[in-house]
Amino acid sequence: MVILVLAGTGDGRLLVGQLVAEGHRVLASSLTEYGGRLLEQEGACQVRTGALAQDGLAALIRQYGVRAIVDATHPYAERISVEAQEACRQAGIPYLRHRREETALPEHPLIHQVNNWEEAAGTALSLGETVMLTIGTRHLEPFVTAARERRARGRQTRLIARMLPEEDSIVQCRRLGFCPGDIVALQGPVSHQLNVALFRHYGVKAVVTKNSGPTGGTDAKVSACLELGVHLVVVNRFPVDQAAMGLTGAEILNLLRGV
Image (cartoon, rainbow, N blue to C red):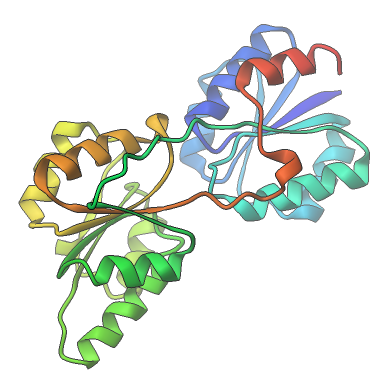
């Protein structure tokens, strides 16, 4: 009997290490091979990589005799969280969602909170002609579409995509029309000082981010934008299920001692 940890974040890797240290048998799952290599550094756990759908989760539950799923994926990875909840419901096993701390956003005219990607695109492009997207690659399309529509009306916008230096991410950016000079590939989280340097170097007028909390570098983006007078558009988290809003790492470890 094992615990399946959907470990798409540094929080997930930490939980894997803690569970292994407490003597649990752990199967850790990562979307990417890079994430899998990081998980292997946590020691005596099994690691699998690649995308998972609900039927894939059900197969893992049966194959490994999974007794609980710990969902430590990114707070914005809503699809896998929904599918994990349903797989657990069907299998009759606990679903434990890790809650990552959010950044407390100040009330400030430079800080703009929005609730979806289309709203983020419209807001960001209205705030300046150079926009840096620090949101990964999955949700770039609404921004590209909005920029194309603005160009058709004679209004230019430069989009800069900042994301992990993964081959698939760069290919996706190129497919969407980003030129090499508008792609910043680096491993985050990024410090306040580096954010300031990057925003200044590119002449950024607006930045788009998720509220990934201090762990994900949101605090450093806020402070850098306020220092430079740059607008920051923050996409709020999308609650998957109000009954599964999340637990701290300590709460998860305590619950699993009795499972």
